[in-house]
Image (spheres, rainbow, N blue to C red):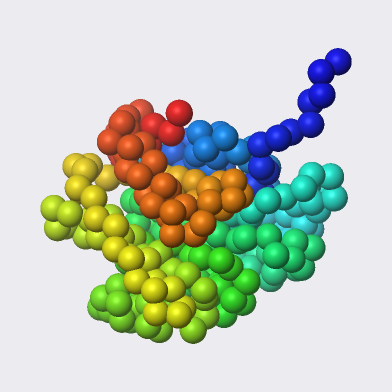
Length: 260
Ligand code: PLP
């Protein structure tokens, strides 16, 4: 038999399940496959939603999430971790506990609080707990501007103002600008030591379901492959933009990124 050891880096994904297939774990798996990584998906929550909006969600018991992730961690070397929907403050603490088993492994935190259609996927308290307890462990967080405004508790704050509030908690922060209405999208990367990078791209028409998940999991994959952070951010933004350019509308609502 040929040697079958997995040479692709493994990314542990802790995210919710979206039955429409646009966001959540399916987005993570597809985006990571496209980078040449292997996704190890641990489900944190189930959602009820279509491409228009979310109608309900249920966060899994902490024991179930620990059992899923611990099984993977005991068996497979993990090169990066990607966090998506956590859904409860207790799940934030569960992730904290899991990360103690993965010292030094890069953590990419997508602070998911709302679905693309605006429906809640967790109370703002979940975001504050992420900021206080998970940001210090994370290599980078990837909020869009509305999420950054919630996390920074600055409802009208600019990206720069939000970053100033959030950087004491985290090493790198990527605030994406896809939710504005200018013809260009400004994605801003901030480093704790004063680094600033701006990545601008053309705004695409339409609204998308799973763009944030695609970006954060691609970034985790790129870090797992050993790419340097600024370059990994650029690669992840470029790939995500292409998946949106090629997006399809499977139902009556938002477009779903074409990741493969
Ligand atoms: N995670 C789950 C499970 C979701 O259902 C959603 C949106 O519906 C998201 C994350 C966030 O999606 P987006 O990438 O569009 O911000």
